[in-house]
Image (cartoon, rainbow, N blue to C red; front, side, top):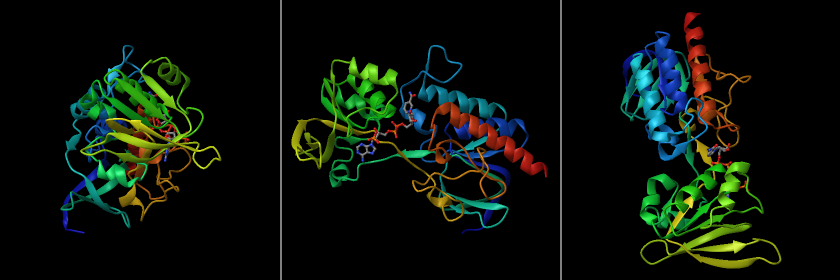
Length: 313
Ligand code: NDP
């Protein structure tokens, strides 16, 4: 690791609801927090459309607007918000060392990890082959390109339903490819999907490949894969959207912190404390259960309060 360039009391990694909320609380507690925004400034909500369930917005708010508001609120209290990605960590002893962009090393008394999670892919070779040519994990980023075209969304959770509904407003036809005979999404989202005429739900279908000359022109599916009556089905589509969940961004911390089998950082007794004193994890990187903006914000708040208490001792 390179030489120490800066020493801080409270370093926050990540700029989703957890990171910004931690920054609001830590700056109001005079911890002079430094926050690095990471790969996706504003986090996953910047790729979503309407957020209808964040308390305090009776009419809803767009994801990017909500994140901009949280950022401004943190800056109002003096949080030092910077662009940059944490590329290495040394948590072997306090103060902890975090490398930013592979070149600068910051030493910190307390660390709040809010690195969130990243969209998962099926792992098909064709996803890489058609990356940027019809394959996407973000409908709000790329949906615009599919106006009046045909698209498929893979997944049966809330994200998949949300993406399908968003795309249904743009595209001519949306297929929702669901591997089970039912949706996992909340009832309200299911109802919306079922009542949208240009969404067709393909239950018990798995995607095994994509095809097309200069970009995606269709997908090879298998209905009831592995069953005696399994059946090959091809659909013609121009866009293929993944919405099958997320992988927590915990890789650089894994040598030091305990994670579960998926990679979520394990915290102690419902708090954001990790087994390392002064190191906290908040938001989706440590939450396999709820993964909501409001729960992430709440855990960011708790982490900042924990950091403040830790520094008092
Ligand atoms: P989920 O884990 O809830 O759902 C993932 C979906 O993808 C499941 O239907 C799963 O199928 C499917 N899937 C996973 N792997 C594969 C695979 N290899 N092939 C095919 N299908 C696969 O993730 P979400 O991102 O949808 O949601 C995460 C959390 O965020 C949830 O708690 C959700 O409620 C929340 N959320 C809430 C929103 C809201 O309230 N507005 C909006 C978006 C998310 P299977 O069911 O078979 O496991």
